[in-house]
Image (cartoon, rainbow, N blue to C red; front, side):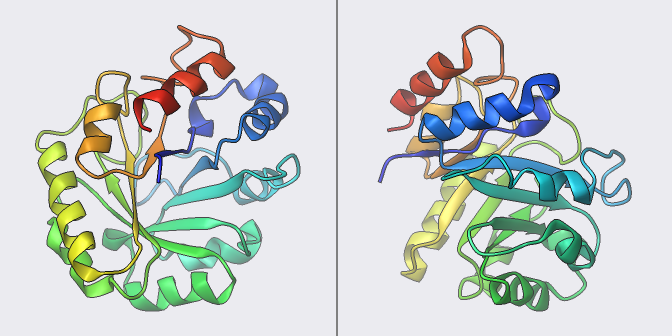
Length: 221
C-alpha cells in the first residue's frame, strides 16, 4: 500500500481553512491532522474542543486524525464528538491507564492510536499490539511546529517497523515531526505508512497546495 498523507492543520492558512480542507479532500488526501494541546502535558495550546469538532463539517471523505497532547485525554472525547471514521492518538506518557483510554476510543467506533515521544523507549508498544490500529512515532518533541528531527528518529522508526511486522497485525505507523521533502522518502523506506506533513513540506509555501500534495505522494509511494 502506498504512503498516506495527514497534513497538519496547525500549519495551514487559518484564514482560508475551510477551502483548504475541501481542497485536500478533493485531492484524495486520507487524513487531516488536528493537534490538541492542554497546556499541561505540553506548554502550548492550539484548537479548543469546539474547533476540533467543527472540522467535521467541511469533510466528505477525508478523516480526522486527532492527536491529543493532553493528560487523561478521555475527558475531551465527548466535546470533540469522537466517532466512527476518526483516528485518535493519545500519548503513552499522558495516560494513567493506557488500555482503558484506547478501549474507550474503539468503543466510539474510532481507530485508537498510541503516540510515543522521542525519549520513550520504542519497545513499550509491545504491551498494546492488540489494542491499537496505529502507532504515532514523534520525531520531534511534542508541542511546537518547526523543530529539527530528534536524533535517532530513523533508527526508532525502523525498530518500530520491526516490532509491528513481527506481531502479524495490520498496524499502521504514523510519523510526526519534521516530515520534510528531504526526509519523507527515507521515513517511508524505514517503515512509515502515514505522514504528518507540515511547514517543512506540504505547508512550506514553496509550492501551491495541490502541487505540494502530488509531489509528496510521489515521494512516499
